[in-house]
Amino acid sequence: MKRLFRGCVAFILVLFSLNLTTSLATAQAEAVGACVLTIDGHEIYRASSCSIRSENSPQASKGLYGTISVAGPTALEVTFSRLLSSSLEMWAWQEAVRTNKPELYRKSVALVIYTPPSSGGEQPIARWHLENAWPSSIKVNAAGLLLAETIALTAESIQRVAP
Image 1 (cartoon, rainbow, N blue to C red):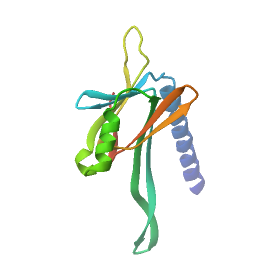
Image 2: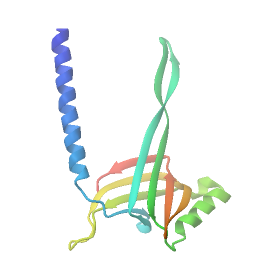
Image 3: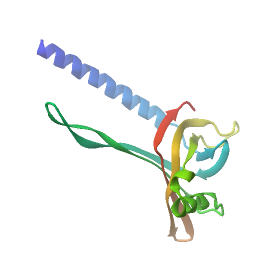
Image 4: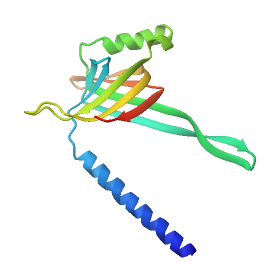
């Protein structure tokens, strides 16, 4: 009976692994044109690349039968990179968060990743909703003749929604 159970579990894990690999391969086949951040339908930032980090920190919790590990505070961060532009919107927002009451400047924003522009225009590939987000850091790097900026947004929650 145990062998049959182990065999079924192994088979399910192999199927799950194949399905996950196929899904990732399909998702990676899409070329990314732009990562766009919007607030109330108004585009405030457009970048050539972005990354989303969402992880749970394990915490020990003492229970009736001993100590167990449970999910703790979640780290939610979206990072954008692009060539430095003349736009000051993100800089002003980050400055307001840094110098005033940060809770007043947390905003609900949408992140949409688009395909490269073509004859049909940009098409959305993926979309996330960030709740109570704020710019937590802005970095400018000089590389030769180019200036690049990297902006990190921290959010209280990130939810993947339909494109």
